[in-house]
Image (cartoon, rainbow, N blue to C red; front, side, top):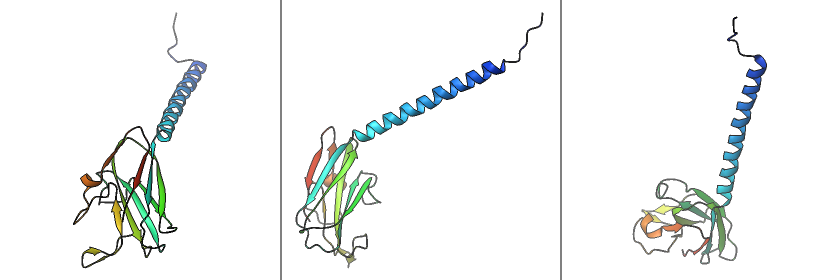
Length: 155
């Protein structure tokens, strides 16, 4: 008696369907876990009360050590100024070490203006360090853990 080694097409289709179902279910669970993790991040509220005037915008960037003074932050917000003050919130911030840089971009050219190497626009950082020279990540850094944070930055 000969046995056939050719798989039954019905069994093959059922197996393929089952594998695809399990794979799509795995992707759905992974996506849901990612969305939950994103929603569980902390908020960081930043207030600046000493903006010189209401001209232009204030640019704020949330940085890691890798992005500090090199590029855009991991989150970036540009906001209008009202009554010489701004308040913004970075949302869904995951645990880690960060710093915040803020710039009063008076002429809305999306960058800090310099004259003879000196900044011509007001700026500030988290922890409000007093520094002469380029700002240092180590002076402005803070830890995000499991609590929301608030900062008052001074220009």
